[in-house]
Image (cartoon, rainbow, N blue to C red; front, top):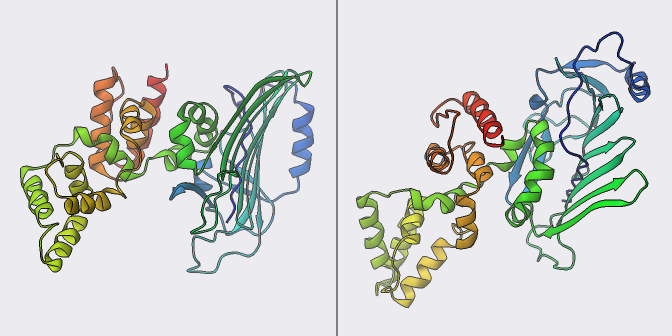
Length: 370
């Protein structure tokens, strides 16, 4: 399956109030856009968050439009949102019990007209024949700004082609005369790898778009194994767990194959906690066979280098993202880490319900960006 994401954006934006003063002129572009959608049926939503479900699957992005019960081009109305939003479903409705890995195709367009200079911002999300396009185009009389994130994952089990990286990030800004003002190009073998290698540009150019679509936490909540690797230094395993792991490691070079195999399976069954104990274990006295078995077990738990993990332990965005994790222990560890690194003014309860946590995370992120 191919996935292409393109994002066009500029710096901070403000949205027009839902009701403008009577004396405020209506931009010609808006009048034209309103005329184009005047005859469309309407559907009201409580929030833009009700429209999409973005997530990372493996190392790549996936999106599903959660409104699959309409069959014609429809204007979406969201209270307090003055933008013009339309959704065009494509193809047949999914059958009951259909594989959610095959979502219905759709075309989403949001048009915003901002400020006295008639700044126009178009945001598009299209899913068609397995290809996903997320785009934002921003233009006024002074400049055109563009960010493009292109993600084209290889077929299953295919060897990545180093000459054609599946993920590319392009950033550009053109002045009114067409001359370039900013040009950036990054490539990676996956979306996750791109985020790890170029976090500053991801945070500056990609996050704001997903944040406005209310999908930031869904996309950037880190892989649980990665978060555990990063925060493992702050987690204290019980003495009983340490002793159990040591005993099992001692059997990994036993003369009896069944005993070695049983020990390995039990270590695997202990999962992440056992992996963290092993990461902290002095392995200098282990036999070659024990070393090989431990390396094999840890392979799926060590996702980044020690240097990258150390950087992420100091990365406020990563720690805030971890507050969205489904694992309450990870949320607690991330919160404790944030308290050590910052003068936190916003309170966060790792045990609160998802809605309360989401509200606190949004306020926390805003407070730390001041």
